[in-house]
Image (tube, rainbow, N blue to C red; front, side):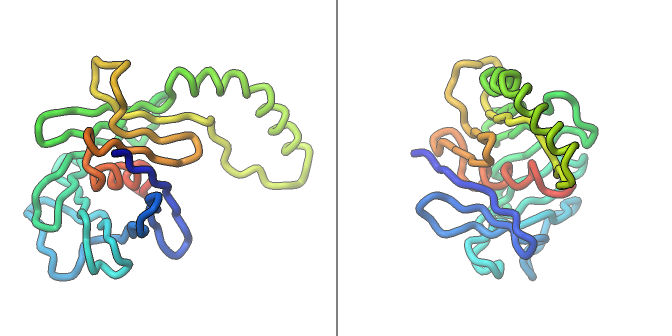
Length: 191
């Protein structure tokens, strides 16, 4: 089964909206009375309700700067490793699952890079038009996808895919939906 969801970072709240399901709310910190292990610093909680009523997973920063995705019972679902703040050309995101499986995600698949090269002249014309007008440009980024796969298997099925429009697609046979939600938030969350 495939889970499809989108990110919606509003000014008041941050939520993930799975297709055909209730939204998953992203809340800073952890619920009151939720004790953490020594060395874990709370980052955010994924909850079915907007008031920590039904937490799905808690994401904490472990010693060494890595993020751990924990169940409400403190069982570790996965470890997320984000690229350094100083962005390289194609940053690598990693998901380490408890069964020693590692999923690598790199921005910029070959089709999305080719599409970017084809659209580059149009983007340059658009930017030139913005420069000549009085309207603010905003942040422009390349339309790239990110795909999380097992290393060494470039033609295997992706466990998690992010489209250029911000839609995530997770295959439940490959990846727990709570880990997919946590990776989608951690990629864009303030570090």
